[in-house]
Amino acid sequence: MTIRKFQTKANFLIKRFFNTSKMANSKFEYVREFENEDKIMPNCWVVVRIDGKGFHKFSKLHNFDKPNDVRALELMNYAAIDVMNEFRDIVISFGQSDEYSFVFHKGALLYNRRHSKILTYVNSLFSSSYVFNWSQFFPSEKLQYPPSFDARIILYPSDENLKDYLSWRQADVHINNLYNTTFWNLILKGGLTNNEAEKRLSGTLSSDKNEILFSEFGINYNNESPMFRKGTILLRKKVKNPNNNGRYNCVIYPFFEDLIQNKFWKTHTEIFDYKSAVPTYDPTEKLPDIVEQQLRELDRKSQKT
Ligand code: ATP
Ligand code: ATP
Ligand code: MG
Ligand code: MG
Image 1: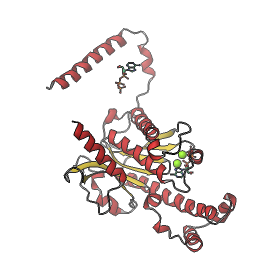
Image 2: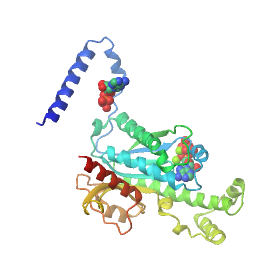
Image 3: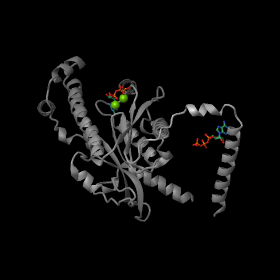
Image 4: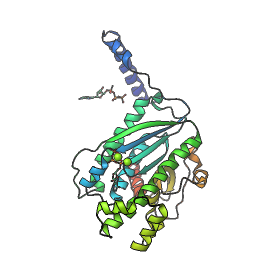
C-alpha cells in the first residue's frame, strides 16, 4: 500500500469512527428514520434530463440569436462535457435548446444507485458549469441573474426503450427547429409581426414549411447546420492528439448524426457494452473546437505531472 493510499484509508476510518460514535450518542439521531430509501431499480437505463427554467425569458434578456444561438448551444455542450468527465458511467448524452439528457449505463452502481444523489449531483454540476463558463462563450454579454435548471430521472428497462427515448428527443429537435427557422425567417427577413408569422404557420405541414423557406427565402432546410437540425450527441472516443506526437487521447466528442436510424447504434456499439475500451475515432473533418480544447487541457495537465 502506498503512503497516500494508507493516509486515505486512515482518514476514512477516523472519520467513520467519529461520525458513528457522535451519532450513537445523540438523542436526535432518530430523525434520520424520516429519510426515504430512494434506491433506483437495478438493471435499467438511467436517464437524467435537465431543462432550463424560463429560458424563453432568459434567452431574450441575454440577446440570444434567433432561432438558434450557437454560443448558447456550445455553452450547454461544454457544461455537459464537464458532467460526463465527472460521471464516467454516462455512456451517451443528448442536448438541444435548453435541455440535456444524460444516460447512465444500466449496470452503473454509483452512489448505490441513490436517486437523489445522482439527480442532484448532475443537476448542480451542470448548472454551476454553465455559470462558471458563461463568459468564455458570451464575452460581451453580462450574466444578468443566476439561471436554474429542473431535472428528472427516467428509467428505461429495455435497450429499445432507450433508443426510442433518444429518438423522441431528436424528433422534437426537428419539429421545433423547422418551425422556429421558418417563423424567424418570416419575421426577420419577411417583415411579418410575431402574430402574423404564427397565423401563417398555423396548420402547416413540414412540407409547407420547407416550401416557404425555399421559395420565399432561398433556404434549403437540409443545408442548415446539423447541430440545429439534429441536436448534439456526446460520446466517448479516443482521437489522435496532434500536439502529443499523434498519441491517442480519450475525449468527449460531439456528433450531429441521425440516431433514429439503426446505423447510428451499429456504429457506436460501446454505448451498450460500456466495459469495453473507449473506441478510437479518426474523423475526416477537422477536430471540433470543443475537442481541441479538451486535448489542450489534457496536455497542460500531463505537463504539470
Ligand atoms: P460528501 O461528498 O460525501 O458530502 P464531503 O467531503 O463533502 O463528502 P461532508 O461530510 O459533507 O464531506 O463534510 C464537509 C467537509 O468540508 C467538512 O468535513 C470539512 O472538512 C469541510 N468544510 C466544509 N465547510 C467548511 C468550512 N466552512 N470551513 C472549513 N472546512 C469546511
Ligand atoms: P420552462 O421553464 O417550462 O422550461 P422555458 O421558457 O425554458 O420554460 P422551453 O420549452 O424549455 O421553455 O424552451 C426553451 C426556450 O429557450 C426556447 O423556446 C427558446 O426560446 C430559448 N432558447 C434556448 N436555447 C436557445 C438557443 N440556443 N438559441 C435561441 N433560443 C434558445
Ligand atoms: Mg426550459
Ligand atoms: Mg426546453
